[in-house]
Length: 265
Image (cartoon, rainbow, N blue to C red; front, side, top):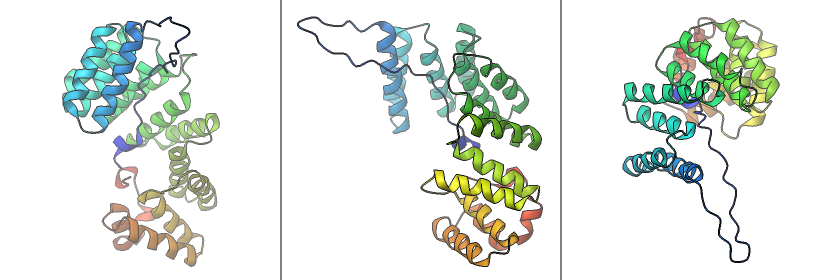
């Protein structure tokens, strides 16, 4: 499928740091946990910018400052996964769970990792465990991740339920709206699929190649050649080398045979 890597957002639960103010001449001591959180954020920022060495240094320091930090363990797991050290990454994600088996963040992080490794059924179990944490606020993200993973099995019915839960809890989950549109398109529920796609389009500034592909094939099936032409032109202009554009141009009947693995975001 689309590279599911781009869809999944790794939820490294980073505690928001309280801005420190100086009152009179007193100074606020930064705890080891707070310092660790700062270095986790710095490490992930360096990793995002491609500075692997500094990222590793900051994440190692974060672990030293707070050996029991779930955030530090999860961030190091993500770093190791991103740099190709998969067995070590697996170990770090599991260490976070060992520190707190009821942590929604730790369970969600490991679930996304397992899904990216193709261990879909195992991943699903960890997403369900993440949802059992009453203090975890990112449940809509968990449902979306679980839905994306279910699409890889593939288990469309399960994915449909997860994506529906995601938009119920957070109507701004654009990916879930798009996936619901795609599922309904596959089921030939074209009007319903169009409604889901419309919601997605309202939420994003730059539609993905797959969203434009879906818009084009839905417009064809709904008898709207003008809209179909517009979507096709946008797809050609913005994503001329994408699999979505190639499928639209060279395999027009793909809309009746389409499987989740054939789409790329």
